[in-house]
Image (cartoon, rainbow, N blue to C red):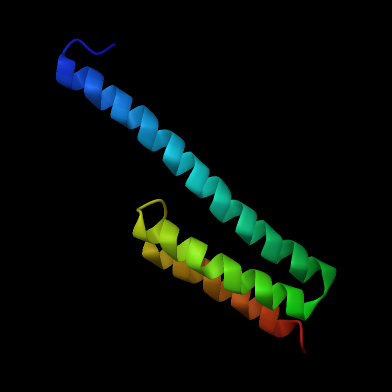
Length: 88
């Protein structure tokens, strides 16, 4: 437990940030899940729309430091590749 005023404040801030980061990560996962579901359903138009919605969420997560930029780019790239393969 925190013994100093500054440590107590740090603990409060960490608790708030954890809640915000958890919500952001859940939001990112939800958007990615929507793309995955659209790919599984086989509807390319829905999948493209879901991907267009998921891409900014992933990049926003990278900007806020939740995931690394390369990780976000890799996920977007792989999802886009899978959506593109649906037409073949």
